[in-house]
Length: 278
Image 1 (cartoon, rainbow, N blue to C red):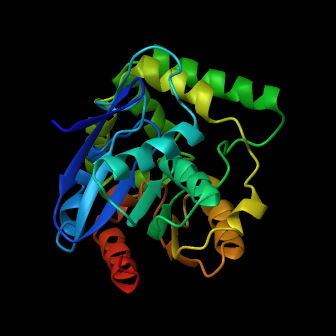
Image 2 (cartoon, rainbow, N blue to C red; image 1 turned 120 degrees about the horizontal axis):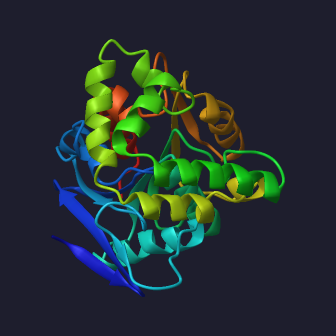
């Protein structure tokens, strides 16, 4: 299995296809299978070289000792580290949800390496929960404790009974049982204690950093679902503030665009990449 080492981390990644390189970064409690299981990777690999990585705290990526690096800046540096490891110059980058938090913050620092940036169901803040630091800390701790103490059956049952904000589109789909069963396979590859630690460490800054968005100079595509309540306004804000950004709304879809609309997502991403080649 392919890994590359960066500091105290062994970061897992997968490759498929040939053509312009596209690095994909998943969301919280996901991993590379977020893209591959519903077939997004397979569809994209028909026209580009898809490189998917497991973020720290997720999937097969391993971190030994402190610092764990469960923050947007470190994960952004891991993305660049992966590109350097593969000797990529410019490349496309697609970040979903938490992966998009890190990707947008990385682009604010320097977007010159990106031929295109695709942001799906995400925000440029690193905390979707508003409020002061203590309010955010308490919310994160409650969420982390739930993830740590619950088994997978309990997590799935709770998500089905309380689908907002992440599973609204899934539960309102005609294929809700199939989609939830598939997404369970994604979550089962993660270690719950690491997910809890990641939640407490990563989601700290509710500031979307509008001034930073205005400095992004690469082509940007933003995709969101009209049932993705937490990320509708943040998607529209990014589209407004990033110079020249394009935005697409998926009617009838929620947060998990790769599972709810894999064909459309792959098609829209391929079209954008073709228009903005490396």
